[in-house]
Length: 135
Image 1 (tube, helix red, strand yellow):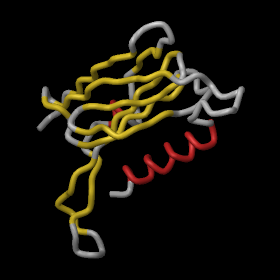
Image 2: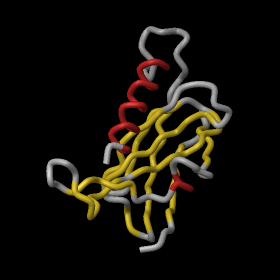
Image 3: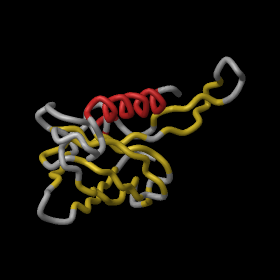
Image 4: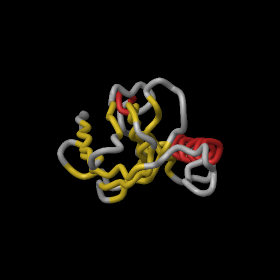
């Protein structure tokens, strides 16, 4: 339920603390457009989020929403770990009597991700991620 909200808050905090803009800060990393698509069992992921974090754990974490399977992120160059999350209403009811949300993307694509990519300053950064899971 709150997993997606927590992820989004953490992404926002990470972006703010690492300087997600290329404003007047000369120490800020140069950011490049990273675009692409996310498919679940061959169909575009309707709504979710994607984050890119340095594979070595050093530097900023960049994230954005996935809408109709598409995403656009600005991220620094280098090897990145990719995390994809999405939630949907579950059969479990919350204290307010409404269905709680559940994370339905398997952990191997987020909490225990094995997805990686490389953001390059010298070429277009267009990626496609395919998630296969039981229905």
